Length: 424
Ligand SMILES: [Zn+2]
Image 1 (cartoon, rainbow, N blue to C red):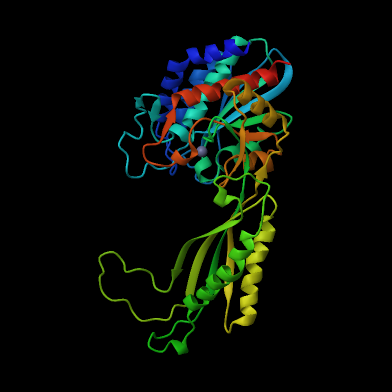
Image 2 (tube, rainbow, N blue to C red):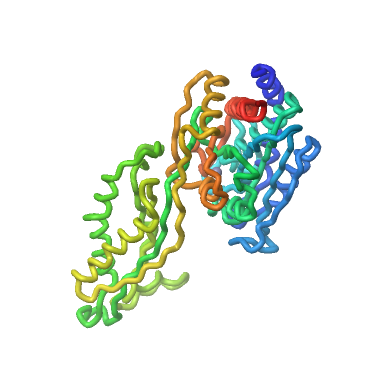
């Protein structure tokens, strides 16, 4: 049985390459969110003749959705001949901007040796194509399966997923009575199972001052110096505290296996000179300074705890430092997600990796988040992993590529997983 399905998938190698190229050649750039309808239509045309019932769903009213840039999603579902569980493959269809440094056409889908090049090749149109091939081969090999197979292609993962999985989860498409197992073919590598991701908390902090003439700063109050005190408190207290926290999350790379915080931006005082003006700046004491922080946290922490820790530092400065005043605005928060190692989808894919690839899987967690957060928090579905072909480090880089053999191998693992879950 195993060998026959693998042979069937291997026989589809040319089809897999062509499908991946077709997907790459639709430039689903986000922002702004282009050609989402085109890519959903391509998949509907592909999957409908195989018996998949396809729905195109627009996330009307989601952030970024407009008549010019509508947020389209596809959900395809194929029922088996008997009751059973539903296995869902979820891929995002959007890609990030091209950026500089390419030596291949970013939307050309060039095949060179075993590699297909293009923006989105590994993140994650290669994974999407592999899941389609795996499902089609499985249906041909085992037309009499139990349960259901779903394939979704969803919008806006690269900008938070609110016009994609979050919207669909809100509509009930990921509720546990409809879907029992979710595999997200993000490019984690064909022998790695990604159990989840860290959380994130983003905020803007503003220190307040008083404007005055720069020659008499004692008549004003310098907001930039107040911010300097904030940054010093981070260095002295917050960063050392974060470094001591240990986690059970197998985050890769190793440096992300703890809490981290980036300071994304700092702005204080007068704006930069406007374009075309090359005169000297005026002399003023700045009355405002703002930073944006990006705090990534562990499954052992909570978003409220992360927020309270920062506020406690700021309130302490208020007591210790004359005229210190601040405002803080939370910009966004994402909860961490971590699936148990003994969850059914994890043990199933793990044994499929052993059987198909002859090696033990490595369990990892992602430093940044992906759509699992919405499936977990909104969909209330815990039985979810990321598993797919491609090298994570190539994502968002120039000359991004995905390996054809890696796609074949991960499709074999996906197909074997379907056999384990839908052929009781
Ligand atoms: Zn991705």
